[in-house]
Each structure stands twice: as structure tokens, then as C-alpha cells.
Image (tube, rainbow, N blue to C red; front, side, top):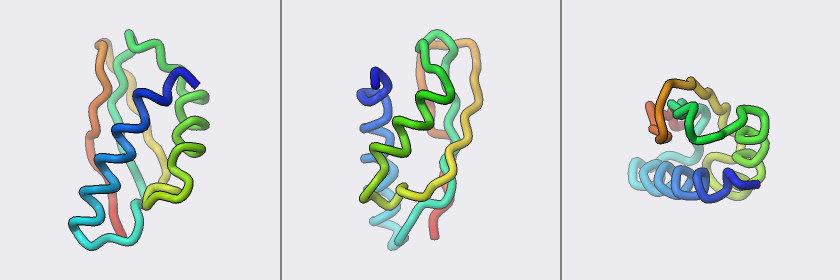
Length: 80
């Protein structure tokens, strides 16, 4: 799970923002992922699902868009 160090801050940041907005859950997360990060889509999604358990993102759909780059960006997320 080499993606853990990439995913944990994303989950933490989105969870904190969602709580501040009074949201109970996050239904969808859209990320732009740099192809040079070495992230594999299936592995990233599996790790995200494991790390999101017990957080507002537990049942969130994860949408990844790859681009030539070296970073991961949160594009948007939907709260309920």
C-alpha cells in the first residue's frame, strides 16, 4: 500500500472540511493524479476504500483523472 502516504492526507483534509460544513458523508471525490506519481488506479482505489473506513468518505465514489505530472490534486467532492 505505497499509496497510503498519498491518500491519508486527502481523506483527513476532506473529512475536516466536510465536518466544518455540517456534512454527514461524502458521496463522491474527484482527483487529478499525476502519471509520474507511479499510482496504479486499481491499487489506489482499493487503498482509498480501506483507509476511508470509519470516516465520512467511507462510501464515497472515487473518480480519478490522470494527467502528465507529479502531484495529486483534489478537484472536488460532493457532501450530503
